[in-house]
Length: 238
Image 1 (spheres, one colour):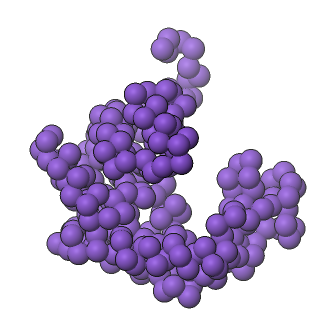
Image 2: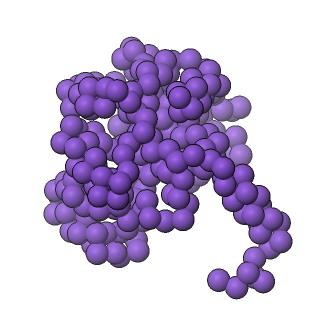
């Protein structure tokens, strides 16, 4: 990259960010929680405050497929055939991503591991470079609250902006605040689908908390975003 092509304000912002991150201790954090528990709301705050990279499995898969990397092509082949992407591919993607400069001080894993087997494979991969998971954040929200959160959620498809008919309604019902375009609900944002996802979460993912029992911080996640962020900040600094 030719730095002369980069606007001065962007260069200054990047230098400032790097100076801010110099004294940040390394942190490797896993976010565990059911759908609608607020992980997506809190991860940008945590990423910015602690200079961590945010690794979401869906984002990593899409990026690898788009870039046509070897792992991306393996993942695409699995998805095109109607199968699931293997744990080894996901672990490989995580291993590739944590080598990037933005992950120098650590990472936030969102959406993985979802089973104890995946957690064991993650631990093994990290151990090869002398690293380990430092903290596991358990986003605890009653199932009944999640149903209300999920079924009332609306999104602006083009931008990803999210609204809630009760907790964060748009200025005009059914319309995006910025563009005025119609909002939509994800096909999975219904009570029946959520019930199945919660059953899978309690069956497969909750045992991951026991696997990391000495590193778990329980977050009461049915509070305001600021209250949840305060709990997370305290937990990560311990």
